[in-house]
Amino acid sequence: MFFTRLGQRMIHILTAQTPSGVLYEVDMRLRPSGASGLLVSSLDAFESYQRDKAWTWEHQALVRARVVAGDVPLGRRFEELRRQLLCQPRDSVTLKADVVEMRQKMRDHLASKPADQQQQFHLKHDAGGIVDIEFLAQYAVLSKAADYPELAVWSDNVRILESLQACGVMSAADAQGLAEAYKALRSATHRLALQQQKNTVAAGEFLPERALVTALWQSWLGSN
Image (cartoon, rainbow, N blue to C red):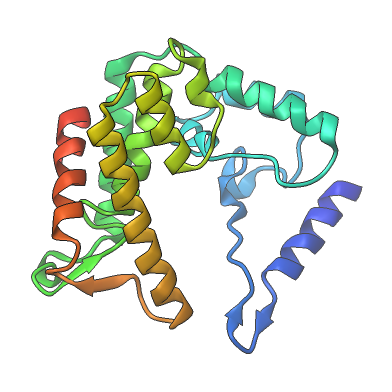
């Protein structure tokens, strides 16, 4: 109960409304069992959920998970558990289908509408954008970490892509191209956020980056 109240208090502080807007966006629906789940659970309960009940998209989220504060020994236990979970062997056909299905659902709800795509490009959610790069990296980790455990070390996209290159899972040209595209698109989203603008740019921007991402998505996941 204490840690639940502490978590609630931290969320309240982090999401405080300031003259410039909300301090931080905090989405706790990504916890086990979503909004109906406990805000705080034991590590054993978390492991049981991840092994027996978690959806593929929850393991994708685990690729990005990292310890940022708190008890150091507990943090180390979590990091080891995370590595074990990510390095589990997976059925490649099922994994690919799950990732493609989730990506399509996100596009259907969050990407630019077909009527708007001639005028704008959504930096995060449109085809060839940030989320495509993130999903590619997550898919690569989940599909290859059983053979290359070093892929489960990092949680940020750039170092994941560097690890994929180092392991020979992805060519240097592809990994470096995706990393540069990711950094360019993220920089643009940051600039727009500071100006309190939406994550959209003119349809003619970032065409080389989008073409590269789209081609690699097709190559790895066979869907566009």
